[in-house]
Image (tube, rainbow, N blue to C red; front, top):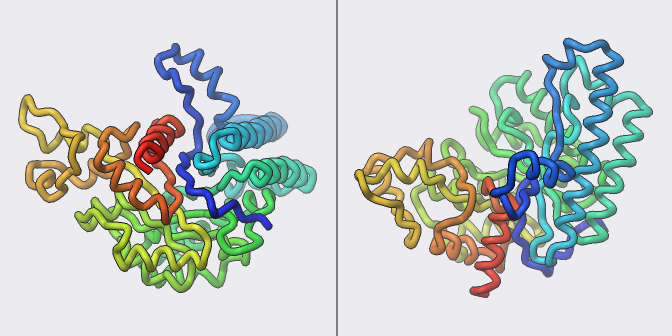
Length: 353
């Protein structure tokens, strides 16, 4: 079995570890955090080097990144069971889909290195019961009306699937979550059109999340019989101007799309600069109540600004709203303070549970 323990309610974070004392000097913080943090490079830098130097740098980065991911999973695996959930970085293998440089990881010897390194990460995650996921970036647009973009998006998605496969996942439905938005002009139908082109492991791991601008929850629900759906309650609040509730029929349909696997949801909160647009001079943001989105918009706030994620979770009532879903969903915290924010939400959840 590759599935995580579904009897445990989890609250997790995304991609990076942050030390609890962020007041330390940047150099000290970097030293404390770099063992958990992936490195990258650019096509421009690689193109300026000799092939030998570029290849050596790439392998150094990949080796470091696999160890950093291992360290991050180990850190999460030593937390209380309810906090053993983390999204891994999409940049663990840089240039994996870059036409002029992908040959490095496709080399049999290097590919073996990747298989072995990622296998250790997966073994550790299963040993410590850590729930893992990926979230390919905004340029993964499976529902594009441009065939070339769809081709590249499938390539990018399958790169993430390869990492999950090397870790030992993709063997059963939703033993690992690889989440994307619908995006693209073809909408939900474009996702359906792309599914047959995905590998079996990709179809086992793909999830679709409602976004905050174009393709909301109703569009996602058109896919409920084809794949698992991720509910992002902040996105829904922005797009539909509604605090959706756990007993909503649409929420039940999201849960059912997971076919018995414990579903995952996303939670974030607007940054102060977005909320402050609705204030009069001298006013302060009131984080002691749920924000009234129509009133914010009428007072001058913009949805584009309200989309941005806050560092922490300053609004107790908004947190209580998110926590009300916890008995049905694992909660992925999408806050800039990463593990510090997820700890904050977990502490509030365990105080009120």
